[in-house]
Length: 407
Image 1 (cartoon, one colour):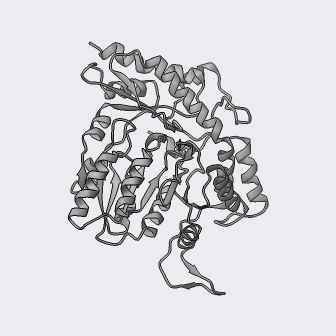
Image 2 (image 1 turned 90 degrees about the vertical axis):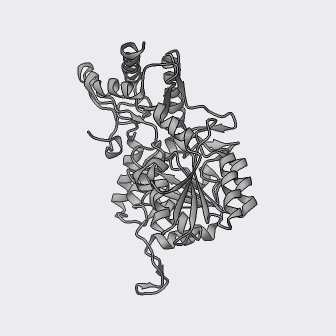
Image 3 (image 1 turned 30 degrees about the horizontal axis):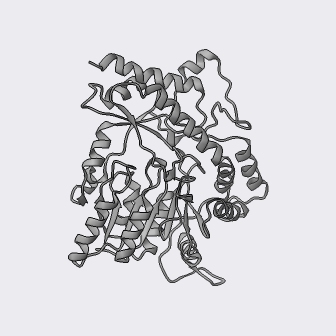
C-alpha cells in the first residue's frame, strides 16, 4: 500500500490556481483518498521553473535565501536555515545544544520516532515525558516532577525536546518557566505545527532552537525538507556551516570538524516559497475539514476529537478522532477497516515512544495518557485538496463502522 508521504501530486482542489485532475464521477468514486497528501499548483511550478532557467540546481541559490527570509518575515524568527529534512534540523539542534555521549535528554513520548532519533545519533539517552489530556502535548507537571527528581540525583538533562503534536502548541508558558528554573535549554519540535501559534506567537519560536518539517505529508511541503530557526543568529550560522560539511574558509577544501550534508536543494526551496504563500489558506481549509468531521461524526456514541486550547491556534494538520471504550463497543480498528474497504487511508494515533521496541529500556515519566490516546484514536484524512464529496465519503465509511459494530 502506498503511503501519502511517498506521493507528490496535484489534487482536485478547492482553491484557485491549483492543478486540476480530470476525472469522471465514476472514476472519482473509486479514487483513493490519502491521509495528508501534498497539495501543489501553478505557483510551485513557476518557482521550480525559475530554478531550472537560472541553472540553480544545487543546495545553494536564490530560492534558498528567499525562503529563509520569507519564513523569518512570516514567523517573526530572527534567523533560519533550510535543511534536507526535519530530522536533520533536529539533529543539528541536539548537537548545538551541547548534547554529548552519555547525556540524558528529555523528550515527548507521544510523537513520531524522529523526535528522539537524533538523541541516539549523539550517543545520548532519551528520557520520555508523558502527555496531558488538555493539549495531548508534554505534561508541564510531569516535566517539573522529572526535573526535580533528576536535579536531586545530580543528573539534569542536557536538553529538553518538546513536540507540538498534530499541529497544536504545547503549554509553553509553564514548560519554559520550569526549564529556565533549572537552566536546561529547550528544543521545540514544531515539525507538525508550522503556522500554528500560542498566545499570538508562532510555533517554532519558543525554544532556543525550533524545527519545522516540510515532508510530503505536512501542511506545507518541499517534497522532503526542513528548517531550523532561532533568535540567535550566530547559532543559525553555526547550523548552516555544519549542514554544509563544516567547510572552513579557504580557497581549497579545509575541514577542522565533522559536518553533514544537510542543506536543502534550491529547487525544493522554490516549492517551499509557494507553499508558504498558501499556508494561511491551507490552515483555514484544514480547520474547515476538522469542523466538518466534528459536526458529522460528533453525535456518535463515545466519539470525541482532539481538544483545542483557547490560548493557541492549531494548524489542524490532522483531524484526530477518539472513541471512548467505556461508551462504545466500536474500536479504532473497526473504523480503520471500514475506511480501508473504501480505499481511504487513515492511521492510529502515534504509538508512544516508550512503547516502541527501540526504546524498550528507556525511562519514562508517566505514560498512561499517551497509551490511552494510542488505544483510542484515529487520524482521519485531512488533505487541503479534499472535496466535499471526499469528506462525505470518509464520513459515510466511518459511520458504517458504528452501524456494524455498535451494540
